[in-house]
Image (cartoon, rainbow, N blue to C red; front, side):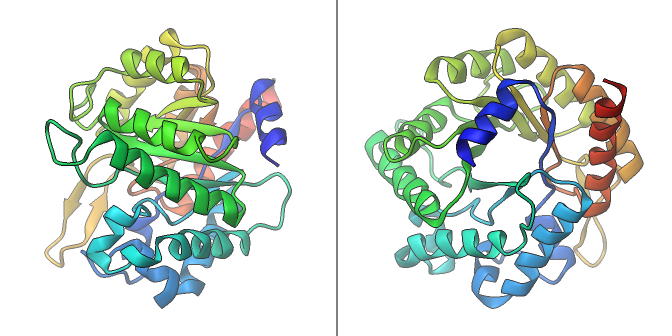
Length: 297
């Protein structure tokens, strides 16, 4: 499946990624502050059902529930000693939702939750080891590719890539979050990270999470001009506003997301989906935008 994925993106075929994990879990009962990975054991049926909902909505690429799956980040949920089990359990539950050979399973690798030296205490060597261990567990579990996502620091992103590549030859996508609009939290620009990730040898580079759809379109355009790699585009459905019940509401509608997806494709994105706030209903409209391009091609 890994080589087929590489062949598919090499010939320029457009694919549909999935939607949000955490915000959809919260809508289905996950308590705020609770780690999504805890649901792998507490609510496994709900984990698999969300994957299934995205596949039914049109996803070709679904992500494992392992965004916080390094032992370092799992410590706040008391799961640091079970990191390999957490990652492999996530693969197992996601696989249960896949019944189509045209759906690939991506192992999600998010930031460690710590800052690298000199801004924090995490050494580069420790970071590489943490990410290598997670990538190994995901590969052993049977994912088709890896997505190093929501990165903001080039040092951590490259450590994650180096760690993952040291243990597997699976396809690797590296995606950044531009939380400051057109900069990451550490001041990185889209063109800069695209060039660096291209030089690393990644299979694709991308934009995910972030702030507004308009700002992320700018990031996509800058990225497209800076690299020949396929581009992954998975932005938030806008920014949340909190209700009196402490529930996050995203005002970008499914129809708005579908229209935005058409613009992403025109701007050169090849794999499109959505991050925070993106429901299966949003995803269905994104998938429709991709299908429309296939029909008109």
